[in-house]
Image (cartoon, rainbow, N blue to C red; front, side):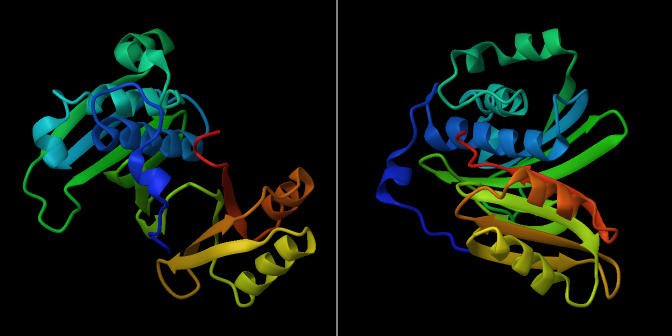
Length: 225
């Protein structure tokens, strides 16, 4: 996956909060987790690591991650009152802080949230200027920044699966910017992360969802939309 970003990304987005890395980036990580979960969380545990563990309260990262999980944008004034908004929506959560995770990026947050019977885990890094990198989804190693249309497929590890999905998307004029596959083991569950320059037609997404070897399809538009 590419870590490239433009000078405009590094300047930072229009936002509410004191710091693009501690606020705007955290909101975006929360929004990605919300998209993967598929709705407002009911329960959750958010863990801040390293620099975040020491500063998340003072810099508003706690309010930011809750705001993202409620699907607020980086410039939404409700970020300031996200705790109240979460209470009104029935979202119960708790925070943890781990300050000495040497293998992790200084600004790392892990989100574990549940809705109904579905529970997901997302690990993200806030890299400055609002730029993020999602490094883990449900135990699978990934590496996307959600600036492009992104599709995550949980599928059986099947011969020809990568070529088949790429062909389906190409037939609908969807240009793949990057694609990665990570699996738990041979013939076990595989996680496909596909970043595209445009959104596939709904009929294409529905077709992929109904393939008997596809377990789940998560569609994440550009995270700023």
